[in-house]
Length: 150
Image (tube, rainbow, N blue to C red; front, side, top):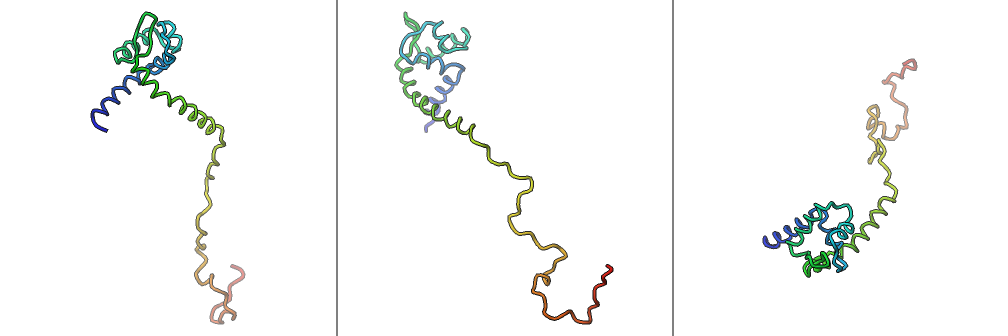
């Protein structure tokens, strides 16, 4: 993407990231002009001052116009919403996925002491000789017998 293309998308995103900007455009999507008050009700929760600011910015950007019947989208505004309309289908699928993810049982938490991945090493008292097969003859007489008292 060229620097010029980056600048254009950055400028558009900055405009659309402004609070309620997309909602104002979305409220005008049906093609019918809306008065200031009707547009404020359509957007919902927007103060008159904020709506006035957004309308001014969107008019300066060539996305919204004001006529005798009220505010409406320009051809550029309609084109933008046409391109953004795929977001509605995506949003529905995305939301469904979020609901499914929230309803799915959480994976089991790992135990505090996980099972060893390899067999445990022989204890220190065990020796390599003890793992060898036992000799068939009794120990030589040079080794004293173990003291049963110990």
